[in-house]
Image 1 (spheres, one colour):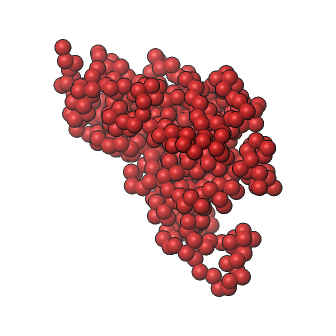
Image 2 (spheres, rainbow, N blue to C red):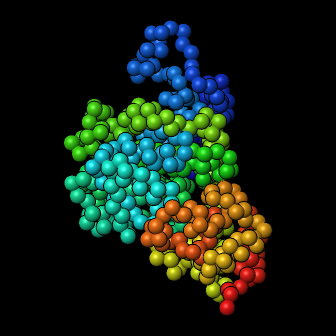
Image 3 (spheres, rainbow, N blue to C red):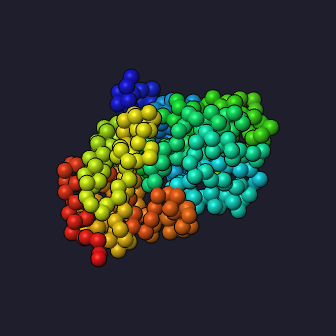
Amino acid sequence: MLFNTKLLHGKSTQGFESGQILPPISQVSAFRYESMEDLEKVFDHKKMGYAYTRIGNPTLGAFEQRISELEGGAGAVSCSSGMSAISSAILAICESGDEIIAGSGLYGGTIGLLHDFEKLGIHTVYADELNGGSVRSLINEKTRLVFAELISNPSLKVVPVAEVAEAAHEASIPLFVDSTTATPFIARPLLLGADVVIHSTSKYLNGGGNSIGGIIVDGGKFKWDFSKHTSLAEYKKYGPMAFSVRLRTDIWENLGGCMAPANAFLSYIGTDTLGLRMEKICDNADKLAHALNKIPGIEVNYLTLPQHPHHNCVDSQLGGYGGGILSFRAGSKERAFAIINSLKYAYIASNIGDIRTLVIHPASTLYVQASREETEAAGVYEDTIRVSVGIEDAEDLIDDFTQAIQNNPIST
C-alpha cells in the first residue's frame, strides 16, 4: 500500500472490538477485572490487558500502532507532549555523567530541556553541522546518544541521517531523530538508518491544532551495548527491544507522561488526512517562498530555493518536498512586527503544522530564554519571521504576505 491507502486501510485501522471504523475513546482511569488473579497477571506482564491509563489504554494503543506502522517501527509509546517524548526517550538511556551529541539550531524548547539535563549531570555537545565527520570527532567514552532534528525549526538544516547513523553505530551509539517537521509523509528516518524517531504530535500529525501530544517510535534493530548503556542492563534479555521495554515499563510509567485518551483519538483521526495535508502544505510553502524571494529587501529561507545550503537534500532525502516551514528576515524587529500585524490570513500563534497559516517572531517568543549564540545557530535573528504554512489557497497567501511587506517598507 502507498501512503494514503495505508492510512485508511493499514493494520492500525483493523481489529476494533465492535467493528468500529475508528478506535473508541476509552476515557477512563482504570479497568476492572473479574478476578484478582487476572489483574495480577496483567501487572506482571504475563497477560495482555489494561489496568490503569497511566500505564496503558486501548485508544493510546491504536494511535501508537498507527504511527509505528507509518514509520516502519517495531513499537511506539505516546506521551503527553513532544517535550515529554524527548525527555522520556533521553532519560531511558542516559544517566548522570553521560554525554549527548546534538546538532546546533534545535527548537528552543529542546535547548531549554537540554539545559535542564545539565543540572542532572547529562551534558550536551553541539556540532555546528551534524554529519558523519563531526559525529566521529565528538564521540568519546562518555557519549551515549546522538540527537538530531531531521529538518530543524526554523533554521531548516537537514541532517544526513544515513551518514550520521553510520558514524554513531561505529561507536555503538544510537541515533534519535526528531522528525516532527518532516512527518513520515516526507521521510522515514528509521529506513535511513536512525534507531528511534520522535514526534510532537501536536503539529502536523494532528493537523487541527486541537490537542497536545508526543510519540516515540523504536526501530527495534539497534544492537545495544549494555556495558555502555548501563540503564538498559536489566532489560538485556529483550535484546534490540530493551529500549522499548524500559521506556514503557519504567520511564514512561513512572514519570507519568501519558497521552490523554481524547488527545490520542483526535490525533488518530487527524492523521487520516496527513498525506493530503502535507502535499498541499508543501506546495503552498514552495509557492510562497519563491514569490517572497522575488521581493527586494527580503531574505527568504526555504529548502526548495536554489540558494539554500541544503537544497540538494530535498530530492535525495525528503522525497522532493521542502516541508511546511519557511522564514524570512525583514530588516529590523520593528518592521517584522509591523509585517506580522498587517497580515490578514495568518494567525499570530506559536504552533506549527496547523491547517491554518501561523506566523510568529521567534526571537521574542520561542527563543526568549536562549543565548544569542544558540538563537543565531537556530537561524533566528531580531528581524526573523517564521511562517508555518497552511492549506489556504496559495494565491491568497502570496497576496497577503506581499501586501504586508510592501505596505511596511524598510525605514530609512
